Structures are given as C-alpha cells and as structure tokens.
Image (cartoon, rainbow, N blue to C red; front, side, top):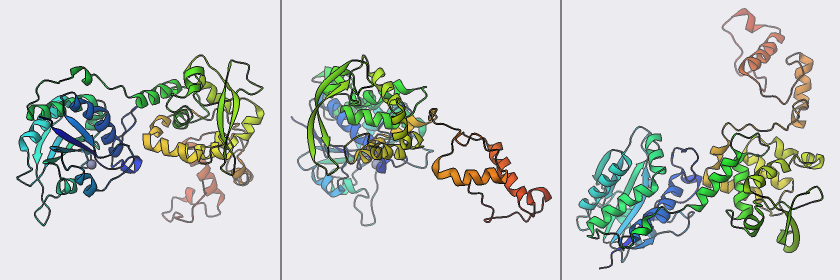
Length: 434
Ligand SMILES: [Zn+2]
C-alpha cells in the first residue's frame, strides 16, 4: 500500500521569520521559516522516502509564506500532513510536542505520541506529548489543522528554538531528528524496515558546507571586508562555488586579472550590465588561484591593493556594518549588477551571516590619524575646546576616555555641575552628540 505524506514547512523564508530563533554559532538557517524548510526538504523527506513513503511538500523553495488555507488544501489525497515547526515560549521551556487535530475522525494520538517519544529520546529533550486546542467555535485552533485536507493532519513542534539548549541540539541534529520522526511514522504505518536504507545516510548540505568553509578561512584574520559580506559575495559571484571560474580557477569572486596581477589567469566569457540595465557579453581574463583560501584572502586584500583602489573603495573600507558595506560595494562600482548591494544584504539576512561578523578585527587599514569627512567639523571643535587632545581621531575609545571627554565638556560649562555634586544635573540639555 502506498502511503502519501505531505510535509508542510511552516512559515515563509528569511529573517522576517526568525521568530526568536537563537543563533547557533557557525550554523546558517537559524530562523524558523528557513530551518523548517531545510529540515523538511533535506532531512525529513529523504528519511521518509527511505521507508517507501511517497512524500510531497507544500512549498518547493525557501521563500514563500503560503496561506494556511492553501497549504491545508494541498493535503487533499494525502494520508498524512505533517506541518514542521519549532516552538517558542519566552526562552525558558524545552521539549518536543505535537498538536493533533481535534476532529476525532482525523486525530491520530498514537502517532503523535510516537513522534514525541522518539524525538525526545533522539535529542535528549523533554517529551511534552500530544496536545489538542480548540478555538471559540469548537474547531481546531491552529489554521493548518482546521484547513488540512489530508486524512490526518498534525503539527510537530520539534524543539523550542528560543531556548539556546534546545535550539542548539535541534539545529545540530536535523538528521537525527528527521530519522526519529520517520521511524515513528514508519512504525505507525507498519513499514518497519527501511526499503532503501542507504538513503538515510547523511544528506550533504552543500550550501551549509560552502558557507562554513569560507567562514573558516576568514576566522581570526584582520579583515577589510566583513565576513558576512565576503561570504555573500562568494555565494553570489560563484553560485555557491559551482561556477566555471570557481571550479577551474579557484576564483570565487570573479576578480579579473588587471595589469597589477602577476599570477595565473583564466579567460572566459562574462556578462556585464550597462547603467541602463542592458546586459552584454565580453571575454575577460580572470585571476586564477591554487586554492579557495587564496581567492578569499586575495579578495579581502583587493580593496587596498593599490592607492587608487584604497581611495575608490574608501566608503567600503569605512563601512561599519554589513548593510553599509554591501551598499558601498555597489556605489563604488565593484560590480556592474544594478541591485548588487540589495542582493548581498538579502543573502546575509536570509542566511543569518551576520553571526560571522561578531568580534571581527576590521579596518586595520584605516588611517586613524585623519578624521572622516563627516566628522571633521566636530573634531576641530573638540580640539579647540580642549575636550580631546586632537590625536587618533579614527581610534576606538574606552569608557574612561569617553567619560573624561564628557567630564571636560561639563567642566567647560560655567556652572560646573560635575564638581559641585548638586542634584540638579542637566538632563536632556546635556548632549555632547558623542
Ligand atoms: Zn511555527
């Protein structure tokens, strides 16, 4: 007997669907919408297929947030609709639970209980059991259960993603989790032996591996470009490392070989875009490297590799966050694609690449002795007032340095509040603009 199962990865894709998902270090897809999709497509679907189930999905790419009604309607003709979720509850709760349909004809408590006990055992998290919830009109509270047209419809809340311990054990064990759920479903439907056991071998997640290998190359280095931006550029420029340039020349960023390049080169056709939007083709020489690591470090150094580039990319080098840096790459003319900055930001936010920027030592190449244009007037004022000594305008500062500057400013005022200890401190009027 063919048993048909429809997987419904809950929510849409991207950072908008983070819903409190804890960012597990070094792992992308740490938001509910993305994780649900990756889990369903790359782990649960193959795990169920290995038992001989026919498996469908309510969505075939990561982005769309399909209405509950449409998702539910897709269940028609299926024996079981499993809506895949992770849970959130203020960060203090752990465990797996299943929301089963309140309609007695659809309800499948035996399966809900099986899923809970197997996932709880696989991940070492509490078993919260099979649950039921009705709305005020007496039907299912949850839309997907109300609208679900499969024979049986249920929601699996695999773990609590707003709890760091749960989020970590779940995110690091999607394969284990999927195997536990698949085994529960197989036992229930009497398919005890996987028909194609070798299929349950871990699915290689190319995208995740690619992100991590680029991130690993950047770890602990002094960088001009934020890791999130470099990783997004590598994804975009090399198509996740699958481009001809990436494969044949280890060139992940499509950097061309100009006059200043003395290394190996690789020629190929490439598309350019005119400011009018028109796309045209040229044959160009590109830099060729011995390894991806070489390509990644050459890309970071590229922006300061000549005086002209250092000047041309000043806004890129000065940017303090991924958004500004991505936009600056476009405005400085790094790429001819018209929405390049937007594409980078979209990728960074969808994959949660900001996590790789934490604690990065950056902007070592900045000349800290010269104030930025936007700060020049304020800097000169501070010098003239004696608030700062006029050195190192571009340097980071400590809390005591900041407090000293505030104190000097306060001292400079005639009424000298800092000294007199009176309670009548300036409130909103006290604003140095620091
Ligand atoms: Zn959810």
